[in-house]
Amino acid sequence: MKVTVVGAGAVGASCAEYIAIKDFASEVVLLDIKEGYAEGKAMDLMQTASLNGFDTKITGSTSDYSKTANSNICVITSGIPRKPGMTREELIGINAGIVKSVSSSLIEHSPNTIIIVVSNPMDTMTYLVHKTTGLPKNRIIGMGGALDSARFKYRLAEALGAPISDVDGMVIGGHSDKGMVPLTRLATRNSVPVSEFISEERLDKVMQDTKVGGATLTGLLGTSAWYAPGAAVSGLVQAIACDQKKIYPCSTLLEGEYGLNDLCIGVPVVLGKNGIESIVKINLSDAEKAHLEESAAGVSKTNGLLEL
Ligand SMILES: NC(=O)C1=CN([C@@H]2O[C@H](COP(=O)(O)OP(=O)(O)OC[C@H]3O[C@@H](n4cnc5c(N)ncnc54)[C@H](O)[C@@H]3O)[C@@H](O)[C@H]2O)C=CC1
Ligand SMILES: O=C([O-])CC(=O)C(=O)O
Image (cartoon, rainbow, N blue to C red; front, side, top):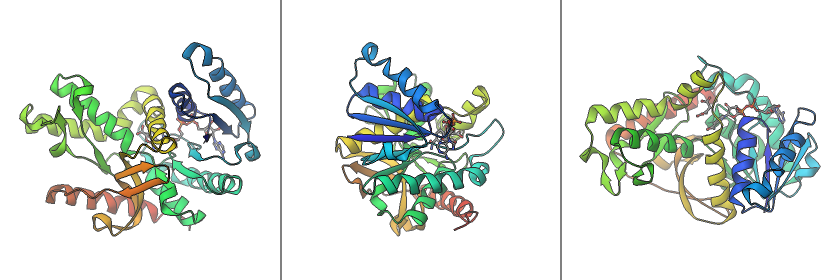
C-alpha cells in the first residue's frame, strides 16, 4: 500500500506521522515544492521509526511526481492555511490553483488512485477536483467531517464530564464555521442519548463550540491546527487501505442524496478499498434538514467563485 501526501507542512507531516505509527502502509511519499523540505521531514520521521516501532518507509520529494507513481491513495494538503480572523473560504484564491495542478500531476502518475482532499476551503476544493479531473466520484473524498466529529466528541465529553471513549457523535454539512451540522439529537453516551444527561442550553453550547473548533485553534496557535487534522486523515486512509467499511462523514459529490445536487458536502459514507463504497442515508429532523440545506447554500456560493 503506497500513500502519497502532498504538502509536507503542518498537516501533511502530521498525517504522514500518524499513518506510519499505525503501521498499515508499506510506503508514504511526502512531496512539497519547498526545496529539501519534504526530504527533511521524511528523514526526521524515519528517525522515529525505531522509537515508535513502525516499518512504514517514508521518503520525501521536492516536486518530483515520478516518486509518487502508482500510489493507491493520495492526500492533498498543499496550500495556505488561514490566520486568526480569516475564514476558510478566503483561501480559495491561492488554494484553487494549487489543488488543481497538484491533483492533475498526481493522476498523471497514479491513474487509479483515490484522492483525499484536505486543503481549504475543503468542500469547494473537493468539488474542484471533481470538475477538473474526471475521476469517478467514489475516488474523490474530502476530509472535514471526521475532524469535526472528533472535536464534537471532545466538546461532548467535556460537557458530560465523561471519558471521550464513552461518547459518540457525528458532524455533517460543510466544513466551515457556519456550515457544520453537529447532530446533537443522535449523539450518545454509551448508547444513551446525551440529552438525558445535559440541558438543551448546554448542548447548544457544545454545538457552537464545535462549529468554531478550527477558528478557536487558529486564534490560539496563529495558524490552523494539525494534530487532529492529521489523525483524522490517517483514519480515512486506514479505512480505505484496510478495507474497513467504516462510516465517516466525508465530503462527497451528491446527486440527489439528501435532496442536494451538484456539490460536495459532508454526509456519512462507508469507506473501503474502493474509496466511498456508499453514501449512508439517515433520517434527519426538519431542523437538521434545514440546517444542512443552509450549509449547502453556503458551499454552493463558494463553489460559484471557482473559475471552471
Ligand atoms: N480539511 C480540514 O479539516 C483541514 C484543512 N486544513 C488545510 O490544509 C492546508 C494545509 O495546512 P497546513 O499544513 O497547516 O499548512 P502549511 O503551510 O504548514 O503547509 C502547506 C504546505 O504546502 C506546500 N505547498 C504549497 N504549494 C504547493 C504545491 N503546489 N505543491 C506542493 N506543495 C505545496 C507548502 O510549501 C507547505 O509546506 C490549508 O489549506 C489548511 O487550511 C488544515 C487543517 C484541517
Ligand atoms: O480551521 C482551519 O482553517 C483549518 C481547518 O479546517 C480545521 O482545523 O478545521
